[in-house]
Length: 143
Image (cartoon, rainbow, N blue to C red; front, side, top):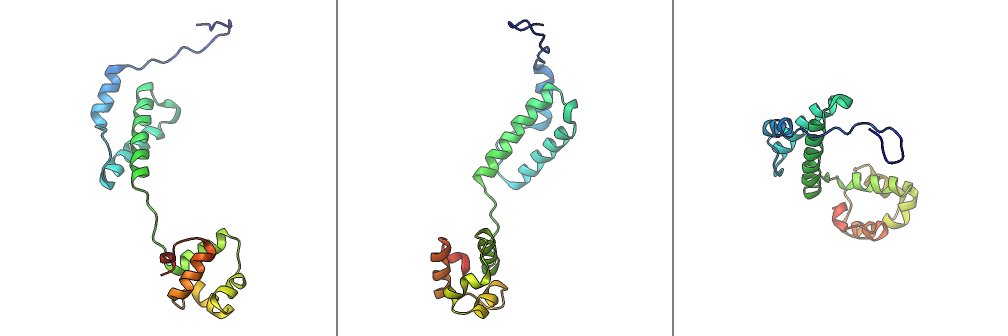
């Protein structure tokens, strides 16, 4: 087969609807509404992806459909882990490339910062408000 430019092009692989229907019938794709269904669909996708370049057009089409369903579920149900207050403080400090001494003016002393960062002392509501203002986050993150 040649393109208009005169160069040879690879023959396009066409979707065989019978084979695709059989694959879809086996996978039974539907909108994912819970974690169990997510796991089931993810296992099917893993099996298809393991085939790598040996996937048929039908398998590739099904994997793209299933990945789209997974993406839709994950966007609708984001998994944000709940951090302990000292873990959140550590993460924010790391993201801002801050040291404990940088927070001493906010918490009052280096020892209080050290205790808060290491989880040895709970962060008070007053300090949570100050940290929230400094990092521009909700105070609930530190309580």
